[in-house]
Length: 313
Ligand code: NAD
Ligand code: UDP
Image (tube, rainbow, N blue to C red; front, top):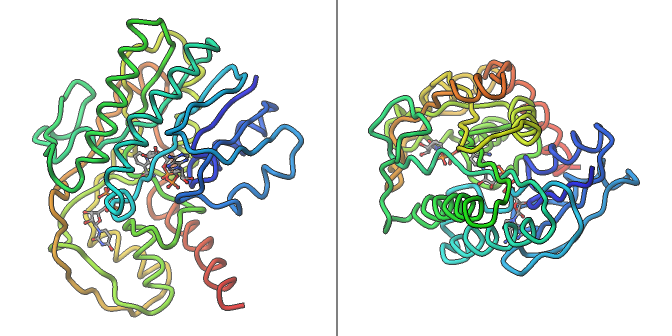
């Protein structure tokens, strides 16, 4: 089949590209390189079934394809807050353009929504039928509300135009090829530990997240795309909930670092707890994550070590 992947040069998009090429599919990778890097696509670029198109999804797309994975969007809080209007535009116009392309071509679409649609949740763990607690005017709104309206567009295109669209609500996902400088917690802690800098804990470090390794996530996304009769959003994430202290301790242990923990103010609207209820993914996709966070972090440290060595060389 011919796949189009928006956000293909990013962390998850590039792994998805590799996985689909390995299955024998053709892939057109679309990216404006805002946070993605061509280095992530080195393996894909060496294969005949891959084509890269430098394009901003806020502009209309035209291409023949059977299936579209729509991932293009800045994903790290510091990056999506740097140009909040740009983030809203990417979430809204980007998704609209993808859905228009799907309407023209009849392609099936899987889009990456986020646990941020639940905001700072008052229901725990978060189930797909929870409608969330999002501040519509805060600094995270460009992304949270952007992804919410992206879901709205998706389900309106399904109702009005019969577009076969699926929304995966991704919870925190990590692994090799994350941008070491994009400011997310896993990349920050690992880079700080490897370079002997202080580990920056925001707030008192007791806020929780649930971290999914990229191999599990890519497997879930492909299962969601392949499944028949999916007509509601599906949470994809690892239900093992940990606080940020715990993540800092694991990273320090793996790296063998003596970096100090320092405390910085908690960013505004930073969710206090987050954990997916993944019963729907289990029921409709027979999917659950398999990689424990200690193991995934150890693999990720290996990648970042090589990155640091490359920088020094
Ligand atoms: P990433 O930043 O590595 O990848 C995003 C990609 O989209 C980048 O390559 C970037 O250059 C590209 N992009 C951004 N704006 C674009 C635009 N206007 N036009 C074309 N390309 C554009 O982030 P990621 O972690 O790989 O995230 C991929 C998707 O998954 C995003 O939609 C994100 O919202 C979603 N998601 C990720 C996580 C996570 O923890 N990794 C959690 C929830 C949701
Ligand atoms: N965080 C932290 N130190 C950092 C970066 C992030 O303590 O250097 C915290 C952040 O406040 C949040 C959690 O780690 O509570 C996860 O942050 P991330 O930016 O990775 O993703 P989020 O889930 O907030 O989108």
